[in-house]
Length: 192
Image (cartoon, rainbow, N blue to C red; front, side, top):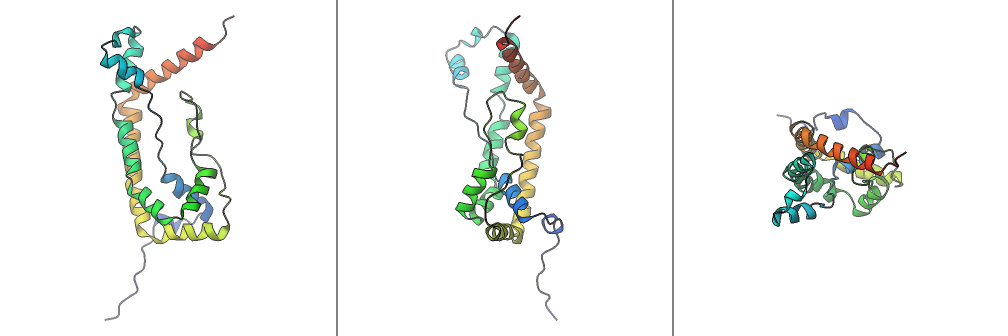
């Protein structure tokens, strides 16, 4: 019996060849997670002292209670930190390459409440500034490991679940937050 050499089955990573730079940027960005600074100290103090009733605006109070009771954001951060895909990427790619990717193609900061700028935090055009040989070697390291696609599929499924949690199951919270932001913006506008 003749043994055939093991051949990796075709995958989306192998089937659709994008440039190594585009692949590496997307692979890096898929390993990212966003953990904003906690801004709940005042809320926690109002709850712990029994002074939550100081918030007289019923809509604001209802939105605050719901927003600070949602575990979805905590789950999202935890799953990002503990992602097997993130771990594989971080273990496989040289630290200098990761720092360069972060500098040129990583998360951008936006002001809290900037709902327009959210789309530009991570999804923006960039180039790595890395030599082609370094880019090609890093991309090939990821492409050659079958776990890359397997772990990425799990990560995508986790993110899709959290996206449904945020946009459908908790729609009232985000509508309430948008209304609060709109109200704040209107109150800052100069009056005629």
